[in-house]
Amino acid sequence: MKIHEIVSNNFSATFESKLVKEIADYGLLKHAEPDQIILEIRRDIHFIPLIISGIVKTMRRNGKGKGLFLYYLSENEASATSILYALENKKSEIRLKAESNITYISVPVKVVNSWFQKYESWRNFYLKMSQIQTSFLLEKINDIAFEDLEFRLINYLEETSLVHNDNTIHRKHFDIARDLRVSREAISRILKKLENEEIITLGRNKIILN
Image 1 (cartoon, helix red, strand yellow):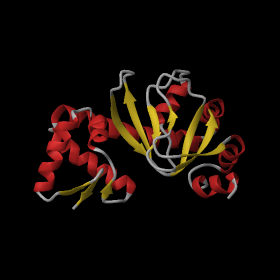
Image 2 (cartoon, rainbow, N blue to C red):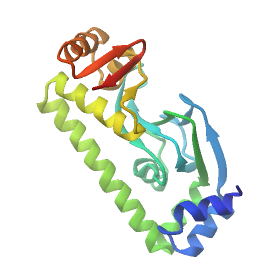
Image 3 (cartoon, one colour):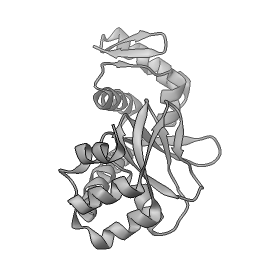
Image 4 (cartoon, helix red, strand yellow):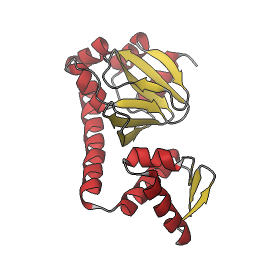
């Protein structure tokens, strides 16, 4: 399938026809495998990825090996945060990493920035993405500030299950601990408690929501 057909199928209901054409004309169709980094922290942003299929994990990291999971991106979405950094000509402060096999359209930043003046549908799209992703961030802040780890872990598992549309979550305890920025021992202890309560079933590098 050619890029013009892919862009039309995914975005014709969202954007004006002229914008759809520009996305296809200026964008490059790309693919990434699980764990491949698409956008890295402290790097210049040269393009904005528009997700066609698959799941992308958005993370904030401090450069010392510590990070925090923020939110997922999926079909027909883009990171409003990365768009904002590009608008302000700043280096990225987030990491976008493929959670699964993904396909995306890579659009040069200069082109994306011009859309704010040219297309109302792009401004509306950006505002919608910004609102949704800000809500996720506020929820994360609320959970960290006011909820216990068990509550945060259950939310994390449910969110991951929902975005993948699968009750089986293929993830190591260490990876979950890193996303929630807690110790692996704490995650393992709570997962075992949830299994004893028959809320989940634990397997080798996988967790099944009952």
